[in-house]
Amino acid sequence: MDRAQERDLIERTIAGERQAAGDLIRAYQHSVYGYILRMCGRPEMAEDIVQEAFVRVLANIHRFDFRFRFSTWLFTIARRLYINAAAKNKPVYDTDYVGSMGNSSGQFETPMMAQERHDIQQDALQQALLTLSEEQREIIILFHQLDWPISLIASHLDMPEGTIKSHLHRGRKRLRVLFKDKSKLAQRLAEVSP
Amino acid sequence: MSWSSIFDDQFDDQYDDQINNKIDGQSNSRNDESAELNQPELNQQGHQRYQRDLRDPQRGRVPESLINAAIDGELSDEMQREIAHALNYDQSRKQDLLDTAEAINALQMPISTPDFSEGVLKKTDRHRRFLPATWRKRVRASRMVLGVAAILALAGVATIQHINPRLTTLAAHPTPIQDFEQAVEQDADRIVQVIADEAQHIRASIIPFDMLDEFPGVTDHRYTIEINTDAHSNQRSHIQHQVSPYANYSLAHARFPSRVNQPAVFISTASFTPHQITGVRLHHIVQSDHADTKVIECRGVVEIDLEQLP
Image 1 (cartoon, helix red, strand yellow):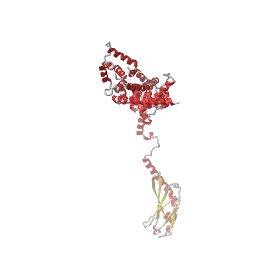
Image 2 (spheres, each protein chain N blue to C red):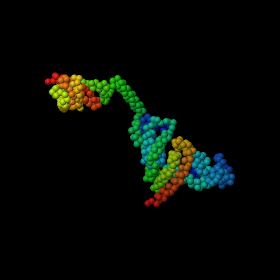
Image 3 (tube, chains in turn red, green):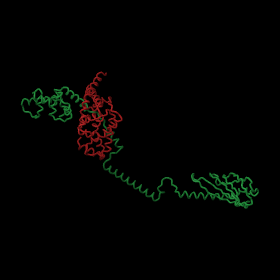
Image 4 (cartoon, each protein chain N blue to C red):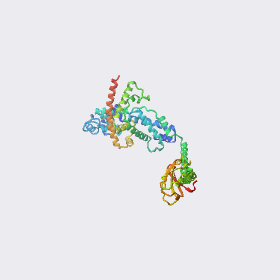
């Protein structure tokens, strides 16, 4: 969505158009949900956070400053909510959710074996992510999953760009090692399980 | 160009062709000298320069910082080509990069997302209903009117209260202190009147004093006085009788409390000559608790002229 479309939707939402508010939610729900889900590893927690973030954003939409990006505002609110929630509940990856990630949309018509491999990968990835520090995990998700530029991440997290890069590089290195180990382990477990 | 194209074999072949063409003296648009140097087999000079440019001189490996820069998208396409080529000679680093790519690809796989729109809008409706802009203006104007009306109403009530507090008092009316004082005075007057009315009954009960004439001097004679009345039978009260002679002779007067409708015993202990006594003054002091806290004391004096007694 370009900025003109975004602005149009926001203005219509401020004017009280319910349909525009729905479109605005649908435009950003995927990215913000993916971000929070990867951060916390629990779908029900992520759903609560994302819903609350949208409610807060819409409740204050008339205060939105058009000089900034809507996504930045939404992600900032979602992030704060996640931090508060994480303070109460330490992120734990829900392994039961593995099979439901990334395939229910029906975009990928894969054979059973490919599906299993995909599930194992997702499981390994989430476990590896949760082993990283909060900063490393968040920066990797923002950079690689959401394609945010370094400068935007620095602004979002209120850190210098050099620090962001440092976290990114170290986190990526750790993720590579962890992901590889966990993938192998998960693969072996899958092979030995009946 | 995406950093992941580093793993594209076709890309690497194209790059090799470019290098070979340049080495063969054919026309080549690439103007980057380092490209040539990335083919260490081609010539010794190029090999040395390649090592200087892309490999860590200590370890002979492609620096990790360079790989990171490529993944971060900070390098030009040319530079990425060079790295891709150099990685062919650093299999360990290439494997690391492949592993990284696998993790990143897994991260970019689609995630099934529930639709939040209905739930969010339902929740938002509770907080702030979605109304058309024109309606929103009317709602805002109505709220302002209501607010102003409320302020005016409060100001009006404050003014009326200032002028006439009784009109705006919702609770039981407070009793001003002057009313209380007035009530006490009225009560006292009423009690005095009651006592005065009772005087006739008292006078009738005082007959035993007549015996004083019969027993002059210190007699230790008992006289029983009973004041019969209905006036204060239900009140917490007591009556004090003070008996004193009219004459100037010393007469230890008796003073004792008694209750109405109960006999009070009076004992004469004074030494006096009966004929000097011309009368007895009874002071009836009635004390009554009033309004729980206030004690009203009123005095009724009944003068009994003994000579006038029947």
